[in-house]
Image (cartoon, rainbow over all chains, first blue to last red; front, side):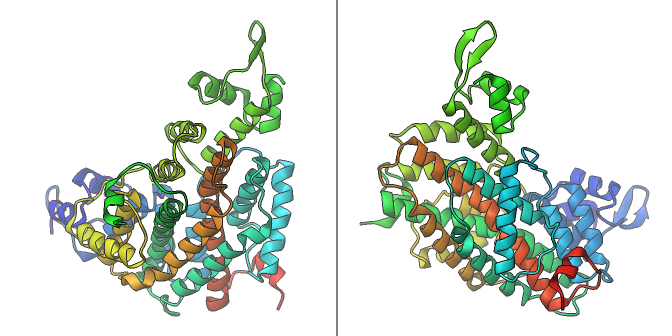
Length: 221
Length: 221
């Protein structure tokens, strides 16, 4: 198919596709004439993958580039592929007070919490620091919650991680590896969306809602 | 305290504090001389709140401005406050194919799923569309999972939303409202961090890890 068909079928503008081609994120098509090339299913799939990671997953292009390279490198063990994904999903250094005593103290609590869960997590995993930053911020703002408050969060994370991993074949090729990464990134967004809706439901149930809305009309009594 | 103390105690640079003051995100201090003002605990708390929402929560300043206004407006019912937070956490329109037939189809499945959960969620809640986009993207990429796959995600979202709401007093004043919003935004990050670590743990347990790392050394046998 031509680049215009590729655009139509993927929903990505032609200019965006040309940009991905120039940047090497999308492999070149087979040249069929001056300024023309033929594209196939491999291009569609790659394009949908890039769009899902950038538009829904909000990953930046440098993270996507690293992820694509890790997906097609079938020599790279799956745990390392997940590590690339994990780092891509925590791209921004939060900066403020990363060496602050509160964060260091919270980090000790986080490390103990992860040890108590018997989770094997690398000492320099960015998620450890991110969790410590959250804990320190909650404490500084007087919203202190002890580590036991996080237990149901860890339990949920554990159950969902296990369910997702069951879908990944042991000898997965590039397509399976791409699917694993897509699920990791997109189901994070899905979980956030469901959390939003669950909150809306329970906060309305508990505190009522005075403004009449279309939503209320549907709930009836 | 002076602006320099405010900076030291909050970890925010003086230039950033001045920017927040100019933008009206932070109330002015009490003038004590030309170009000098005295700041108090209210400034510290507000500053920590802004920093937590922007650096850890990754919210943009226009969202933070809306949230701060909604927090201090104690006339605004709590469900509406949560709605402001929810919209702040889905700031970016994903654009691509939002009217695509796949997304519309997925949206029907999402609406039925939410109905089956008996959740009361407004028809125009951005989270509905976001979940439909995720579902459509998974299907287009051949990572199809039926809606039953999302059931444990919904269950986790439900349990965590209930736990968080139990911390919010029925007649909450501005400080309680701020705490509720801080938890909503920051615990989303905490949940993501825990999901990262759970994935690392289970992927390593299931697929092994060939590269020797500091993390491995800790796991022992």
